Image (cartoon, rainbow, N blue to C red):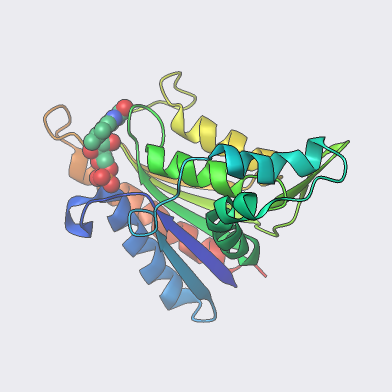
Length: 212
Ligand SMILES: Cc1cc2nc3c(=O)[nH]c(=O)nc-3n(C[C@H](O)[C@H](O)[C@H](O)COP(=O)(O)O)c2cc1C
């Protein structure tokens, strides 16, 4: 079992609820199934570039222009995506730990998605649509937000974005532990909400350990 953990949070763990969910998840996973390998990607340590024109050409020109071969500049601009796409494609499970910022994922996580969800990186684009190169079976989304959100809340662009982006790659198994209501000025049950999300993350680790 290979697990890729992508963390999109600049804060230290003691100040970050979503990072605390990831600690709970990986501690529980270690207890239930020691037979797994984890690759940790801290996006603030290994920052994704925005997709440049060179990278765009390298990703998309081979799809839209018959016989196009990426130039050296294209290849250089695709290096981050190649490196991170390899980790993505080796993973059985991807864990994303992220805060909600402006109702969606932080820009740094969106930049990572724009790199790795590209043709020749995690899928091949053919006439009938995208064909996965990866074999990811489940996404674990560990998220914290200041406000509270009901199911299918129109203000929640985060889970919608994650479902749509990974759905494009054929990944529809997405488990979510969400510590919402973490703004203690508005919610006096922030700690209970966090604890419930921690327990959910632990249960999700037990379920991941059962994946063959
Ligand atoms: C730049 C920024 C934008 C934020 N936007 C939202 C938001 O749109 N909705 C929300 O509920 N909370 C928002 N928050 C609050 C965070 O989601 C909340 O503090 C959460 O606990 C962050 O996760 P963390 O504790 O793992 O850092 C925002 C916080 C920051 C710093």
